[in-house]
Length: 223
Image (cartoon, rainbow, N blue to C red):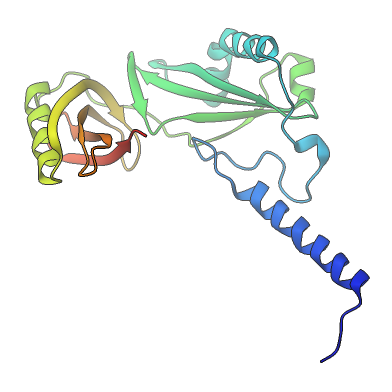
């Protein structure tokens, strides 16, 4: 068997490690699945900057003051508003701001927006940015014809079909469902309970507030 020189082996290991790191950094998803802020090739300026609590709070406050202008730049409707949830800053000064949306005062599930603002735009005082997961939100009415209690009953039945022990309603609220397909008025019902091993869990059930059809469900497990 041919032996590989130690220097060559070490160099190969370094190359492989660098490749894995590059792939990992490019593919780690954010909450709203934003695009990688700086795709290949990796630059040091594209790495996340370390912020003090005061610096982070200042960025959140500044972003909140620009929500109306940002909503206009993104072309959101008159009934849509943005709520700042987080701001990340790169070492080159680029900002990545995550917003939740509301429609006529109702939370929009699956409608998060991530805005990427380069330093040049910040210096010019403009809102020049790119965004992800933008979907036009419009529903015929925000008045539910399928009642909140009926939606809660369906959610409890769904939880019990999963053999959830001591299933109880933790919360229920009217929302706009924009996770898939055409946005719809819906109820989000959260059912609390326990798994077989005693671990607390929460079943989130999204029910169409017009037809009563289940639109989506997911399990939230507390550890």
